Image 1 (cartoon, rainbow, N blue to C red):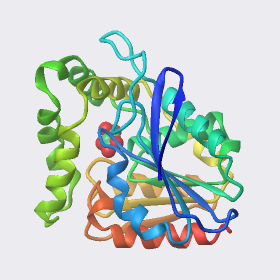
Image 2 (image 1 turned 180 degrees about the horizontal axis):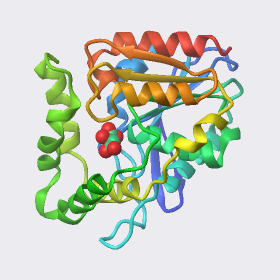
Image 3 (image 1 turned 90 degrees about the horizontal axis):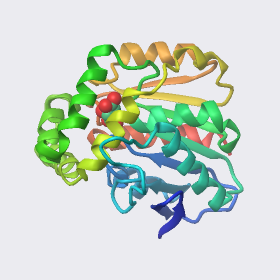
Image 4 (image 1 turned 180 degrees about the vertical axis):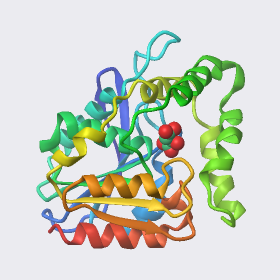
Length: 272
Ligand code: MLT
């Protein structure tokens, strides 16, 4: 089922799939940059038998509008994206455990939720993401893209990102699907997210305070959030599980969906 709610000037659209028992875990799947909930189609298909799967489009992506913020001077902060997810959770009032699953930028947003609204979810899955803030160099690259995006268009962003997203040998059809998804993103949303990510704080020092079940998962060839860094992240979170996905780069949930689904299933099953 596709649903939507109005939150702070935007229409937020989300899919709500699977109707297991009311107490079954609910997975809230938060997509990366600059994608949409479409990236989760394999997870929705495979996991909705057992779990309730809610996949929102962040404001400005897919079927969600961006609201009043994005002009050349303003941005959507990661806190705003996090607050939008809190509004969706408040609206859904799910009875069972809520697993917050954040992929890449979705992981940055999940860490923002953990900082301010930790009571809104019971478990955390951090997929192909980072706790560290940007280096000065990557911050400058992001701000340049934000400034130039209306001139460049989203297709150029897709081509710039393509070489870093996939493991060697990923089937061209999978690569093309993601490249097209990126290319269909509104330029204003790309600018807004780049500015938001450039401004995000370092979350490394907060990891030891995370006191809920946590899964840390990464594609073995991830060039954006490298396995070594994610393993260190897992070691900093008390009791966290660490999983590496073979045959996958940054886009592990689409490159090797079977292995990612198996890891999510095992993790979420242990919660109910
Ligand atoms: C993403 O996949 O969400 C982005 O690559 C994250 C980033 O740019 O840091």
